[in-house]
Image 1: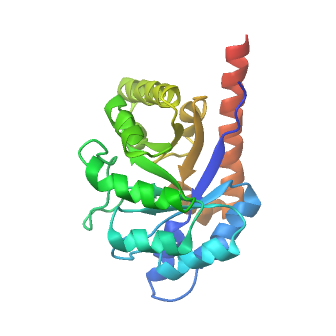
Image 2 (image 1 turned 60 degrees about the vertical axis):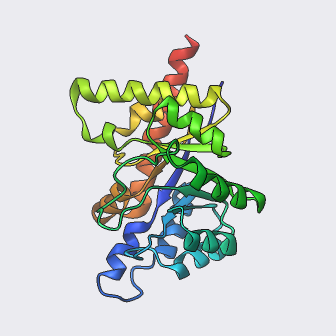
Length: 251
């Protein structure tokens, strides 16, 4: 079955550069608009507790000023729930968050966090927000996502991105197996974290994955080639990998 692979572009680190001087430039909302024009299917933004990059007003403006859907990444806190319910983004991805971390370091523990997560998923689903959980590619976590009522999962690809050689191949197999299992139990499967031009193709070839979320690499690459070109090239690599995989399956 042919399935379009969506690209979500994370604009967090445009805001990181802006906040380095506490001003208004560069504007992450403008970056979101440029990303949409360059072929992004959606925009991702993570509003952290410490507001180290994205700010509350950025979320409000992206919802109002950008035509593509917003995937609002957030920790499962009362404060973030209230912001999500107020802005009503297209989607929310619940992620683990530690104040001291440089970036998200791994997947959410949906098994241990069942009782805490369930009311968050329920309240956002009731107002039409599509909720996903950012988790490790493990069947037990996928089963837990179903148990808390989340219709979507995003598989953490950070470990895959950091490994090399046979270890990376083994982690890729783990992701591929998890994506197939996710679909078999009724979950829509996304993936993201650490993906680059060099490592995106294998993940993009997995037919059970319908969306990749990529940010840090694209914003960094934009310094050298421009955001439009960076996104279009990533889009082309994803599309080629998916088309090659579909061609191989049909032969």
